[in-house]
Length: 247
Image (cartoon, rainbow, N blue to C red; front, side, top):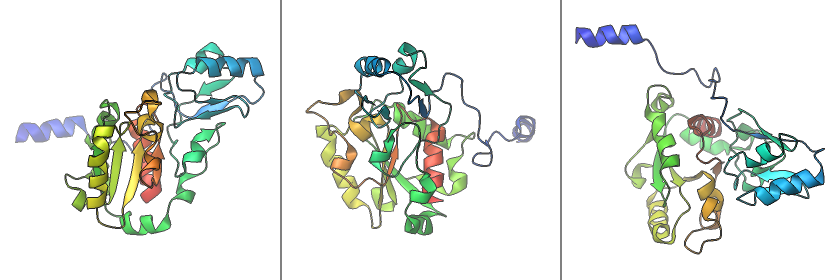
């Protein structure tokens, strides 16, 4: 016991100070895109043709972050003349249409439903459903329980039963085989309930877009309240979304 206490004193507090302070992310991290509206049509078209997700709107010079895998191909081939991915991880929205952006995003706190803040601001219980995900989004949600993020300090926890949950957090492209299980989970949750789409697969189908085996967008089968883009979303992106939308 004394050795444990000694180790605790030597290590100090490992928990970050977010949201009071924004932790630094790795230089290679790709967050919110910045679009150069003056980019030539040829460069934009070149980026659009190279995009594996058809996420670039050539006419309006915008990127659909709901489809984007943040692979950086468009930034690389345009040498940053069309798009540059910043280190800004605060990229979640409450409306699917807002993810189609030229770099500007509405303030999430202003678009959150105020009755959700009143109901869940002090205690938010989440039920996570992996609907045929690759486990990348799931892993970055699980890491929120580590001492560095310590999600529970905000009164937010993942629970085992949908009957004990306030919100369902969905990851994966929602395969045909998982659709029934997801809908059953949603029906088992008490009202009022919240639906959160995490990752490009859940929001649009991701790299499986066009396959008859998946649902192309969670919002086509459930009323989604919060969209968290990324492939996978950074843990801080998830944390920002939860705290801003509900707290």
